[in-house]
Image 1 (cartoon, rainbow, N blue to C red):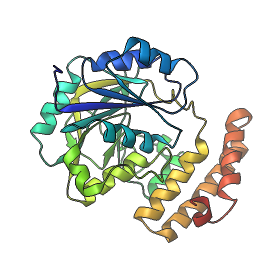
Image 2 (image 1 turned 135 degrees about the horizontal axis):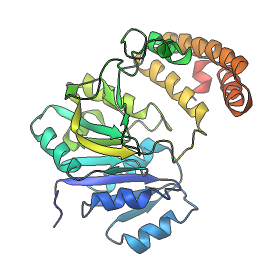
Image 3 (image 1 turned 180 degrees about the vertical axis):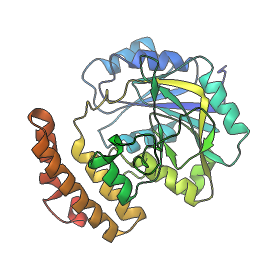
Image 4 (image 1 turned 90 degrees about the vertical axis):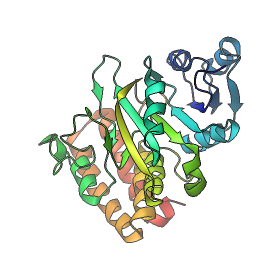
Length: 296
């Protein structure tokens, strides 16, 4: 019998080694599904051999949201715990998240405190995107005063992640999700391949009257970027445009496109090597058509 019979865990993998074992070990006997998107590093074999109790789904890579959706459809529970393959629970963290959600019946999502592998804080609370927030990020303005809400609104500057708080959204690296809330909002919007899918989902929960909470008493260690290694920069940009088009309207999305082009052109001048090439790729993508065509 699982310690948390009302919780089902979902882990999406794409070459999840070497971190996946720590992730799955931390889940213990929690009913778990791994949705694999075409791993070639031994991930599938490891799950089959070492974790026979875990449900394994193999499918094409349709994006992070689609992978989580497949997992949520496969296993039912009062709560779903969605966790990246490069993240793992610390002792007692899942019990804390469930207890927190039980005492906050209006919470659709509860996010834990994220820690880097060296134990330092990994800031996970975010504010809804705005054009100003986008500007502070892409023109590096937040570097001038990272602890202020004025110049660091996207990362909620000044919040020390040391108290429970109702927030706009939390990082999708680890989320406890109330399944009943999805009856109103649906699951992830699979039009978001990767990046911005969690902020879209949590905005939809809040629009439906639910809340999103940060719980500082549950710790999850997160490596960060292990699955994509920073190679999906264009998808990150596309995610920004899709979010603005969906929640702020196409005119605002076009303004976001122009802002991003200007910022990345400046970055491409300032940086050489691989980083400069990444920014030039971003400029080429953003300049290759209008917002509608970039999202089609």
